[in-house]
Amino acid sequence: MPNPTAPNQPPLWEVQRARLESFGKAQVNFDLERTAEYTAENGWRIDDYEIELPGEAPGPPEAHGSWQAGQTILRNYTFPPSDLITGIFVPDAPLENRTMVLRGQFLFFTFWFGVRIGGVTDETRALPDGTQEQVWGYNYRTLEGHFERGQIEFTIHKNLATGRVVFHIHAFSQVGRIRNPFYWLGFKLFGRMLQRRFAHESLKRLRAQVVEMLETGTTANRASDAARPVSAAALPE
Image (cartoon, rainbow, N blue to C red; front, top):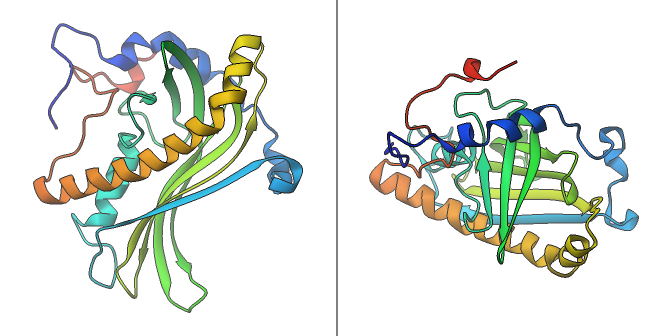
């Protein structure tokens, strides 16, 4: 994978080391014990989006196929629209419980939010029609200080009987606590539009990256990629 950072420049995750450490200590900003109550009837936004990816032959996911390419792209978090959200994380840290700093950009404002991966899915599921699908993905949850509270899940599905492959996004969310009244008003006016833009562009970008990966064998560069390898162990306790 080409390295986007010049040798004399620190990688983005090192530049944001202090924020990564700070959000690493932050708590999820909603009650994980009450997720069954987070419904539209109770004032939560429930979102589901999906896009079909290039198909495969029936059977288990193919080596270097569409499903596997989607998995790689999800791991690298290169699919969100970079002019809206950039994910920053320690590149060689485990995916499970990964803390990410999200750099949000809108108009001439830049915002910094923390999220943490709360679960990784890797399973075979039974479908209502009696067939099965292989599913891989993860969710992340908003941390203290985020303008939203909730969880979003990204998953790649392959129907083992038909070979159909899809990318699915599922989320539940509410407006979080925003102390700055100017930001609160802005998020009330534009937040929903930005949520939908994030989802729709993420679908299209992941599909485009899967197609490119199948055609060329290369993947998009991660924002967090370092100019030189630095182990996760190098982070201070």
